[in-house]
Image (cartoon, rainbow, N blue to C red; front, side, top):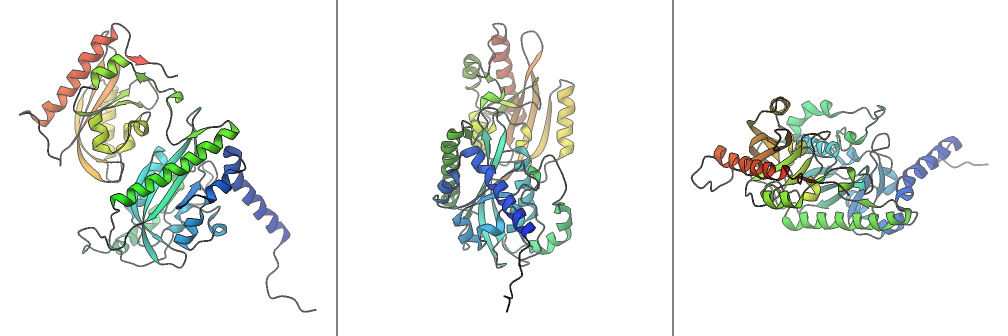
Length: 405
């Protein structure tokens, strides 16, 4: 009897594949109910979900829009790391920014050169967003939305050297052993290991409408996950909630420091990793982060490629010795753009002389400011003095913090 030319699939391999598919699907169904996959299939847009708790930080869901955009059918990306979409000319700095956002468990937007299944490059706006369990703030998934960028828009300075030629020498540094059994797999997402693609691609910038589309798509997906998670009594959120144990300022102190015009945050000196517990309006405007996104984070959230670790070590030494310091640092906004940051860090003591908070006053050196005739350093010290007066005045009555609910 004639046999077909197709190779027979080993029953053991078939069983392992079925087990892997069930394992990936349960990453979603166990947390959002059995109906979530069908609901996600109905949503428009190109997006995927990854699970940082699984080895290799694999893709556990890929939308129909992703298949249309990239040419990869769902079966070929499920279980793989999201670096499958990278290639030769994918910018290493962009990848590093995404990796840092994953490690910091924060949202991130960046224009990045990806590659379709046929090897052709295309620019997308990547919107990365963590999904947390509302009850305890634990990280469940990462959502990655891809919005195609109009190829007609190119950044100024496109005549610079091709990124592929420069990046070729440093690809090995980004290589990660996919089988390395690390307890924290989140840092392995989007690390380029591919050699496909063209050597030269001009940088691209997303339009405001593309950024808005990415944000709206992400919000609708998180909303759907939240809706279905309630069926399992889990309840998820796109932000860490106060229930993680991060206290808020009392209403009196919040009102007092809310009048201060400078860009600053307050960190809690006695909690692990010194989380941000207050962010001024000017800080929100400067960085692009909402208060919901920034509260509970460490000030490293503004770090990125080129941020000096030595300068941060200097800051830590001054914090440990309860002394103030002023440094010049490269910081990053939520959208990935960098700015030269004149940063002043100072302890804030209560009425008893104990350090209650640290204030971090940020100043974009490259922007235009009206300091009312003062030097930038004196302008920053004005914020420090105002916070000190408010804290000392209210600490005597014990009304500095409102415990988390």
